[in-house]
Image (cartoon, rainbow over all chains, first blue to last red; front, side):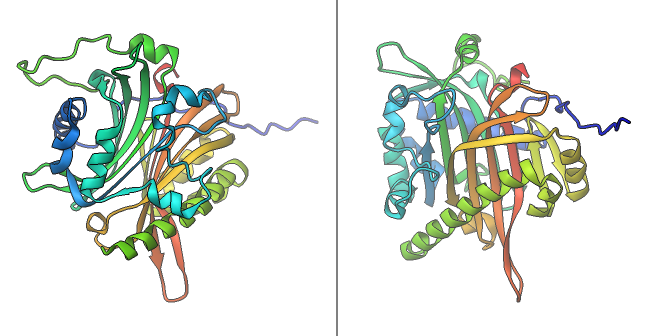
Length: 206
Length: 141
């Protein structure tokens, strides 16, 4: 006697960016180009006008289990990492969540200098209402000023409200940083970055 | 938002996130049929770039998704500013870990949720308003 209890083993095909509509895509692309132009600059103070007065921001790195266990290689971020799974102390949890525009930007300004590969970005829009736009950016960046400019990968959630100039004003920002895989390092910065004078180019992987 | 209120919101977000993370991954692994009860009727999931909206589509999606063994090694959370949510209590939860779907190789993943608090006269319950899931190596999958 045999029974044929089928269990699925096929995963849906993985796709690139999900940007909901062309208008949202244009809005997010413009925002990311401006945001990372400043974030990758010498001084991140310019981000002050991108964050809401009451914005909050935190950063995390992988826990000790997994493919990227070497804390030391992400050492610049270790003390800022807000991994609730491991942090039991409510006071420390509170301290590592940066709140209000000035502390958010001064926190970001103290992180290592970076160069992001905008061509690596994959963006998913997770929610949109008239008062909220939430999206996740995945990609790679180089850490500058270290001996070998290591490549890191990140996954970052931005939640924004409508800004004064038709742009976006950030109220929440959570950034997860990990070591890049061999494949990600191989592909990183493979396409030359657009020059500032060139016309807008699509910066997202298809 | 006064800072005392913010502190309260941060503590509330942490407690909700802790309970949610353990409940969500246990349910998806062991009680998959119950999983969509955690989602709002109007919830949206973006799964490796595929958008899925509404209870019926979610039920169908999770039925055909192979059985899973999730392991979370990091999560973080933030209270979402009420200006964005028009006053509805909302928490952002981000998680990272590994997953093995039956018949597939291990993947590292990142997942982000927006949880909203729904209060009725008799109880209050958190539900998933949006969910975004991606494999770390999605491009080569």
